[in-house]
Length: 334
Image (cartoon, rainbow, N blue to C red; front, side, top):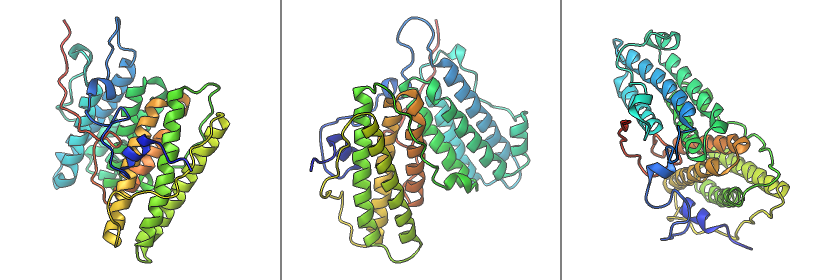
């Protein structure tokens, strides 16, 4: 059978490759992969979306500051989450003229949402994080592809913050919506869908290995749940590609693992590895799909990021964007 694409192997780390085949492999260029800005005359068409996202982040930052100022605040928990929110703001504002970007909050909040957070409940802040994630996803269709990719990534990070703050609802896998087929998908969209399908084939294989090395306990039950989720997502991509008139990429007979799996420790490490690499596939897919279909890929990105977290993968402020973002400086207009 035809093996999955080379891009899939690279993203999942199942084989060692040296050449790069996708926009996120290799060097990280924030001006093209994250926030491209407007290179033509006139205003950046993404500015309204970016400004909404910045305003939502500022509300979060103010809520963090208010809660941190309360007696007995859990600073060890709150400060790293606030720092990640600040990184989100910097990425969203990257390359924008300073005159168009409101200053970051420096004083106590006055809005109703942040006043509730100021009353000292992490639960209120968790709710605000979840609502902020939803606002990012609502703007996916209005953004150009690189910004849509960033919004989906930051939304996944927001929901991970909500989980850390005690909101259990965002830690549940979201139902994968059925993508609406487009009459004439672009070659790039079809290629990315095939890459996602190939990645899910590999994940199904990988979870078979994971489950075989876990004891009959909660971890094995989690592995079974993840295995079924990846089977379901694989089948969804196969149906979509067939509907679009493409031949779905078949599974390979086997896959070379990135490291030996011999015990529960290496099995859980493999599960975290698979989910982390899949976030990269789905962040790319958000950018490559037409606007009406982006929510499907964003849901898959969310689910993989949360499973990676539960398997012990290190959290990142930008799930699916593997290279660290630079600390941007807002440019000044002439």
